[in-house]
Amino acid sequence: SRGLGDVYKRQDHGDAFGEHGIYSDHVCADECIHHIPLIVRAPGVTVAGTHSDAFLYNVDLAPTLCDLLDIPVPAEWDGASFKANLQGGEGFGRDVLVWDCGLYAVQRAVRTREHLMIRTYDSWRYSHYDPVALHDMNADPYQTTNLAAARPDVLARCDSHLNEWTQAQKAKPHFAGDPID
Image (cartoon, rainbow, N blue to C red; front, side, top):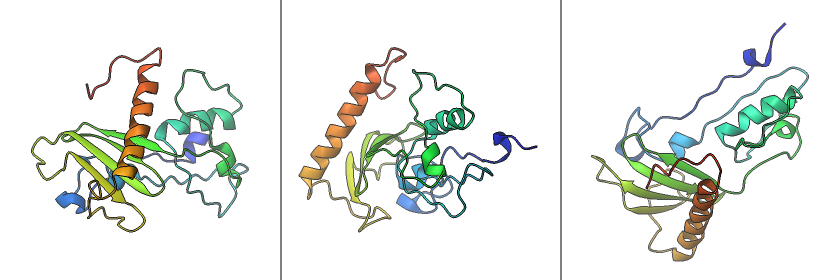
């Protein structure tokens, strides 16, 4: 018999293949690093051919596994189950994702369905990063044009999402300090 551990594989980040002039590394908080396809095949659980474009975090996988195994999800966990997505339903999805990177460039990003905003706090040797970048992910999926100056309305909405997310993280009882600070 096969357990759930045998039927899924997890990747925690992507790699750049020329985006922003970077090859085979994960130095920034952009789409190529954080958009990670997840393929799940679990006989009796998943529906063949099901596809979901839901915005999810890696931390959503553990609550999903708990849900599939009828194990209570600890209340303090940040993730949420996407079991219904696996079973062909509308399921769970987030409206906005917030991504971090602190490997070389120190950045935080906000990803909506339409836009990606990246704030660079420290670019280390990667001096080509703007302090703030905004990209239209539908018209410019390779993030070649910074729209921050041209779209202050979208930038303000993304900043609002980032501030709300940051405050929510800081309010958690297990919060030990923001590494960006």
